[in-house]
Image (cartoon, rainbow, N blue to C red; front, side, top):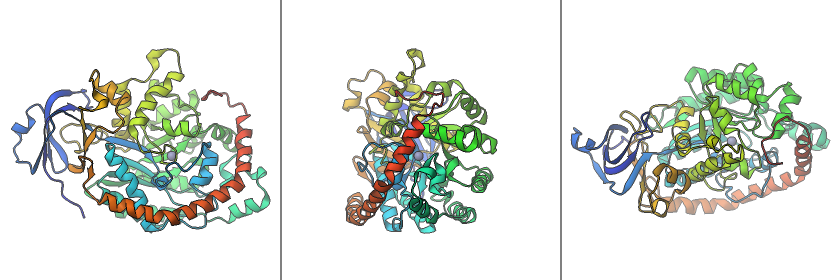
Amino acid sequence: MNTPADSLMIRGARVLTLDDDGREWPDADIVIEQGRIAAIGPGAAGAASSAAVRTIDARGQLAMPGLINAHFHSPGNLMKGCLPGYPLEVFMLHEVPPLAAGGDAARLAYVRTMVGALEMLRRGVTAVHDDAYHVPTATVDGIDAIMRAYEDAGIRATVAIDQPNVVEYEKYPFLADLLPAEERRAMDAAPRQSTAELLGLYDHLISRWHGAASGRLAAAVSCSAPQRVTDDYFAGLSTLSERHDLPFNVHILETRLQRVLGRQKYGKSLVHHVHDLGHLDERMMVIHAIWIDDDDIRLLADSGCTVAHNPVCNLRLGSGVMPWRALRDAGVPICLGTDEMNTDDAINPWFVGKTAAMLHTLASPDYATWPQPDEILWSMTRGGARALRREGTLGQLSPGAEADLILLDLDTVAFTPLNDLRRQLVHCEDGASVRTTIVAGRVVFDAGRITTVDEAALRAEMRDLMAGYQEQRAAAASAAARLEPYYREMVLRAASEDVGLRRSLC
Ligand SMILES: [Zn+2]
């Protein structure tokens, strides 16, 4: 099961290390042993003691750290192009149908996860942080299907169980009053898992999968969002995160409506609420953080947490613009994520990086505050490593680091002519130049071909499974259509409240 990593030599590449010293060489070698970088630099191959099993002639190619997709939900993988433009609250009626009767079978969950993993490997993502939700309830089979897919795909994956456990209408402002009694009763009756049951599933995830596949697979914890879980479950997750030093995923203030909810439900912002519960710490990855104020930014900075920025998702759902520069000025590290396939319709971290580089020009006329290519590249790699609690060993090319790297062909449209490598990586590259993806020293994508699984057979199986999946989607869409008028009313009502912040053009 745990394939030992081959030793591998990459010779003659242009190298962008993104290490602490920002080293870059026009012609250098990378020596990989036991899944890690043993030596790197000009002439490193000649000085290496062991004969490599395989040598890659990388002349004309760029070697750089593999990208880290810091925020992702694999269960949305089959929903590419499914949905029109919805705000988050309406979108979620389709994404995680609150009245769903049944979930995806284990084989579908495996294929679904695999399809996304292979798309990421093709685009040069070597590590993903998957906040995997389960509809309607989390199960050992569902968790194992996802983890097995990542194990077989060859990508590095850190996976959480993102499972809300409060009644649907309690997650929102106004909704309980807006819904007809029979819809409320149906929501009351929908299955919810107890704290003990969910923590039991975490015991399984951690004991079975944390550190599996020679450390390539790992567990994270997730509460989804503070308003979606009971306080005792939230506290249990925080304890788990601390005990095992696991990243803790929390979506906070993604939408304007959530700002209204915080005030209504807790009398304070959701950042303050999480802080006051004692859970805001350096293990936390705060996802979105759009509708935050200066006070929230101070709390986030003091906690040492990382913020996950998902600009394409934020635009797709009309959530607003995260205050990038204010967070950076306060010292908050930022990582980048695609979020899910139904809020991006692709898993393309290059597009995310470019969007992040451009979106924040809207925030200030002072162009000195706009994101710079070095910052974006840091967020695409090392920011994700920080959120995964793997600083120093992921997201950079340096001796001792995991050999997670990509080779990009420099004889492509993105780099022709080659004027400024870093700027062109952010503004020109779209993933099409990625020739080779290496995870833990193993070549998993090379010359247009995934090496770990039969990709064509997998895609064929996915197409076979789609009929049943689409039937399930249609049932969810019909329930969503019935509920949408109430959610629309809620969204518009929240939009009419003054929250003292402006994060969108309207
Ligand atoms: Zn998310």
